[in-house]
Image (cartoon, rainbow, N blue to C red; front, side, top):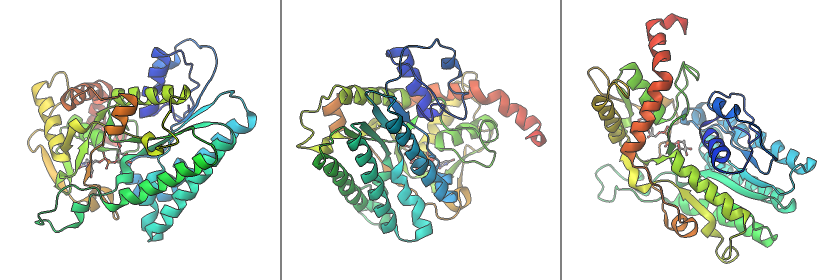
Length: 387
Ligand code: UGA
């Protein structure tokens, strides 16, 4: 598993190693999130290749667009090629965790025309499917909610009656691309393809805390940003007022869905695939946990007020402050105003439903954040020059 030391990788490793007969060969430049697992005794043989290495933080899409494309696509190709050419694996399931969709947003500021990036994505998909098809490999493409882009309401004037969340046209254009890709695979007799879209998976070991286990000038995703603010007892920063909506799902629930996908694909439980390929594009998220970013900040702060000894301290006076997106992320930031997963297909096909409520999820995550980072942050604040 490449990128096994990251947020999703560490949870997937843990699940595979503790609850299934799999042995995991973990590859990463860091191992702090999987150290405990590394001490477990080795098992039998390797079955699957999983690539989780990717850049997935908003600030990096803006500031390092080409790095993002390299990390998320180009650098990953030799991994696939190596496996295919050395033929190490007799039956290989490629869980190809691949954040290709965000390339649209990365390329756009540089190439000015989003059309180019859509063509680029289409080409990438064709290459991947052909690879797997020709070599009899199975592929789970790990996409993200980025495919949904913005909602149509976000383009209307602020007081417009229709200014409410609606899925914008980009959904249909990207869905078309995905359908083309699947159709291409089917034409070539390749049916071992599934697509999984992650929608705001959160939990322990997510991202990093700037200056502690990541660059001090880095900007992680919202959960780590807010935890960092709370640990430092400083106001939580609401980008452009924090009105964007997100549905957060517990990483542990999401990993259950990934395992179900692996099992279904492995045993070829696909009676309807040829007729309705779109039935195998799964949204993995939790619509019940939908909140605005502002509400998220309030829930996290309240959790801290209720259980300060078990969690982390709330800000001293002002709980939140508004910051402009330009100030926070730099020029060119393009937020998505709402993301909520449509669950019909995943419910029907995998009988999967997330279980963890947002309050439960945030309480356990904040406890983890305090245990992991509180001391280091305190030291850093007492001796700022050392960092
Ligand atoms: C990010 C990635 O860009 C997606 O590719 C990925 O699929 C997604 O996370 C995910 O986790 O599934 P996004 O939800 O926009 O997408 O990322 P966050 O950085 O968590 O931001 C969420 C919202 O909080 C944004 O509106 C952002 O502007 C806001 N925010 C973030 C704040 O208001 N304050 C902060 O300190 C940080």
